[in-house]
Length: 354
Image 1: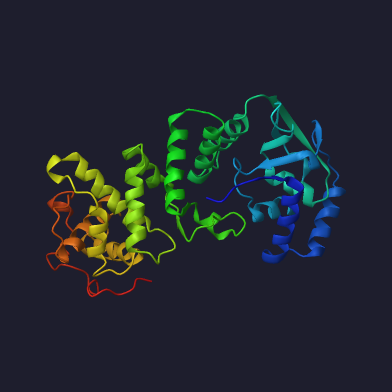
Image 2 (image 1 turned 30 degrees about the vertical axis):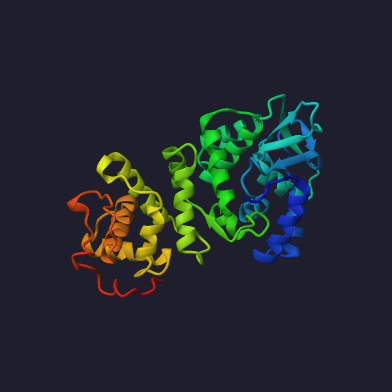
């Protein structure tokens, strides 16, 4: 996981301006026009305490990543009448320098900075609680129209753990992150992966936070999560993105094996299953794609049920190649027909899935 640092907002504004010019076709003339219009707007800011923008910081351990196009839209239609005060806190502590950290309103503040404003209305809460910014950000954003994503919630849980919060979700987040770090896999969403400034340093990454969390819930020590990721990484070494379909299939086989004593599986069974499946399906991406094709062939029009389909596909592909373990499954009605020869044309031999 890449280190996410606090950055001065004016630095972010300069970077965003450059990105807008480079990738969003924003010209110097457009910027000059927007600045002139904003600076000479007939309306003024609503009454509020004005704070120097240069004094505001953004903590990217807590905040979302900047969305450049959102800032472009704000600048283009700038109207100070609807610029509500930025929500920020001033942490009162003897441990660090006292600064103003914005936890809601970074996009309009960056827009104001680019447009040439040096101050912005700001409601500042003074607090001694290190977790206040994280708490306030989550409450403001996760209860509104635009909910926080799993990556945002995970980062905030890590911050709270670092600041001494013993809540179980924070402890689980730390354990989960430790497993990814130990295996050299970045846990991040695909948008973060595309950002060279924010992406993690590792060759591999995984983006399905929900099932990463399920792996931790299945075993608080992180062993199950580590085993699943390690098996996929070991067998399908050339895949940059750890395939979520194969991960879900292995997780579901593990879950099913724990519900029935007779289905208990030996140590190392995950590597064994994937190694044998790979005899026919050469990559995790192909496994996932072929499972979808076979599902549509056997049950046309049926809804995609990833845990059921992926676990059954792995089981039947394993049996097809002579696997000897008695893998659990969801029952006769859930069979995909691979072992019985009822497979979609082209499923075997393997063909790459677009």
